[in-house]
Amino acid sequence: MIDALAVLGGYLLGSLPFGYWVPRLVRGEDIRTKGSGNIGASNVFRVYGRSLGIPVALLDVAKGFAAASLGLWAGGALIGVLAAAASMLGHARPVFLRFQKGGKMVATAGGATLALAPLVAFCCIGVWLLVFLLTRFASLASIVTALGLAVFVVVFGYPWPIIVFGIAGAAAVIALHRQNIRRLVAGTEHRFELRRARGASG
Image (cartoon, rainbow, N blue to C red; front, side, top):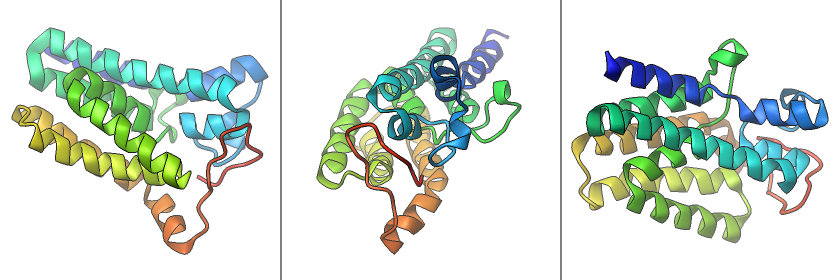
């Protein structure tokens, strides 16, 4: 029973749509009508800049970390992974937005990984920063980092539930970036600006 409640709690934590709530509270605006229409931290950053983008990113990381930590406390690695996966599902399809399209799970997956496999998380942070600083494509940085997640959990020899989480999580993040992949190939993807952006394409 505790295991099931932990997984449910992970989903509810992941469903907290901070990317929607923060701009609504601070600016009185619906982020879904701006930029790419996504409620993820990247779109919030592009539209409103660091003042809202950074808090939303940290909150999305925190909810993934909290969900995975809850699962680890309730039932060890397997329940931790299930709660982490549930939080990512909640971020993608939040119950608080009536299961409408949510974010692309990158920050939430990062927070969950920090709880489940800290060494992998720090490596992934390094990969994301390196790719982003070299290319200024947040989407490409996220895709490469997802691939890194799948590799690192195997290389560092984590237990099988965490390996499954790393591989499945990477596949889910990449699948949610399929539109971005098409734009990257076509050369039309939005290049991120490190200041308040005027628009976004994904």
